[in-house]
Length: 359
Image (cartoon, rainbow, N blue to C red; front, side, top):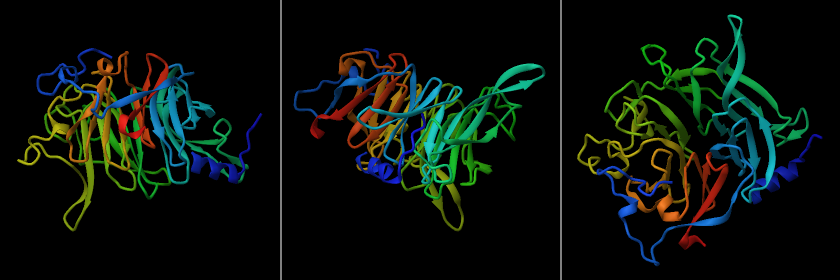
């Protein structure tokens, strides 16, 4: 049975809306070695966790103030009380974002017959959540879906992150094993117009193996900051020194593009926690506290969630399995209304945390 949500209902919904040594490297402070007193500010878990998933990975807070979960073979829409409001089957979904028209942009795969064999190839989709023509409003299961892009000739590529800018243009993080081409390597951050036209790769990032702050190799995730053109980009540690890039947009008479917020080659950037080389192993999820502008990095390689302030300083509220008292294998992150959401694929659930001072 189809669910036809009236406009008033939608508007009302918008308003209501691990390991014991998570830091095994000598170059970073170990959470396991730090001590905390009862009076310390720390993240406390909200029980019970949200369950009912097979392998939840990406978490995303939509512009409609709903939580979207990428789960194995589907996209799940839910409110922040954990009540499911809809779902949509997508073949191997890997990334999601929402523009200001409330359309969902989703990365996944489609099946294509090439040379007599069926092959999975990467694809981008647009799901029209608000469709007055069909009188469908936030009916995820039956919403009209467009296929934006299919890369039939490059089946090993995958779209792992999507970020939307205030003008509804957006960027997509694409990754893959073949980066031998200087013209069209698998690993790339791509710019699309609001009309879903591929515009250009972001050439401020250098594809390949290297120790520079702007090198990208095996991308894992991407998010944009609210009301800006700045973004965070995650990647595996293999072949690069910096696992998360914090890129800020700059425009002047001489330059129009993105530069790292922190530069390790300058005296001011040399001691910034966020850009210590090899700090991150596998940043699977990224989130931003829109009010405090703190950044969260959910590292699946370290079984830890790290928190940094807007100046790139590591914050002691960071935590891993040892601190919360049970296993945590983070696969995604989101932040909304002072609550941190961490998905765990291996345990099939979403954990929730709040600062002790926010209760």
